[in-house]
Length: 115
Length: 107
Image 1 (cartoon, one colour):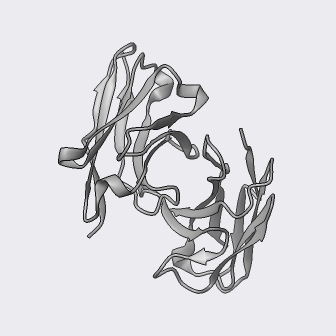
Image 2 (spheres, chains in turn orange, purple; image 1 turned 30 degrees about the vertical axis):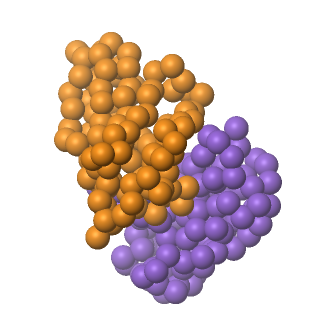
């Protein structure tokens, strides 16, 4: 079946970087965009950025420009989201989601930023 | 950026009630509007895409409508399994943006 499997929870110190992976299966990875969305505890959904896995083209929310990088490895059907210069406010669950309709979601990766 | 607002922010209704959540976009987004349902501890789930198209398997009691800047989702007969937070989201232009969510409870 179509699914996105994300990497496990991370604990990072302020100032560090985190790289979350999202492995696609059950469909052709390069045929659908990948979005990254985060959600702090008790808060709403926040779109971070997008990538076309075929071309590698990306787009980021202004809020994260310069701190977020979305990449992919097509040979293993995996997308990555790296967030740098972490601060406590980046503590959240990070999701990958397929295509503009976000019709398939990963289960989420909890990133905790704490000294 | 296109701002999305939703109302109400929360509601409490009885089983069998008709429930409507509205979503307003700050600019015309044509038909590029999705609705998601999120239950506690779970990832969001796409319910309705392109304003009114139901995802396969979503009960027919869910209905989406609207155009331009004003949209809504209606649950014709609220069921206990519909308890969740509902988000609208535009994908007319980057950055894609979500509404703040509407939490639905059973009275």
